[in-house]
Length: 83
Image (cartoon, rainbow, N blue to C red; front, side, top):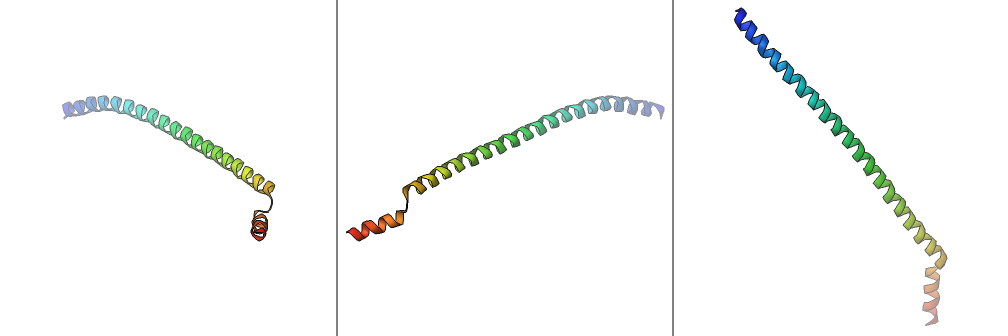
């Protein structure tokens, strides 16, 4: 019985070493994955904010042009009445 216990103990010693190395590799990969997700999320959020700012600039420019053009409906009504 002690021979079986010695073999199991030796096998467990080898497996434990490989398990520890595998666990450490998994921790490193998980940390890299989490950092990548965090960077990706930050990049996506900044891109979304950049697009929103650009859309706001375009919308403001269109509204300024409309304000400068005056009353388009009134102008069309006057032109229609002249004919």
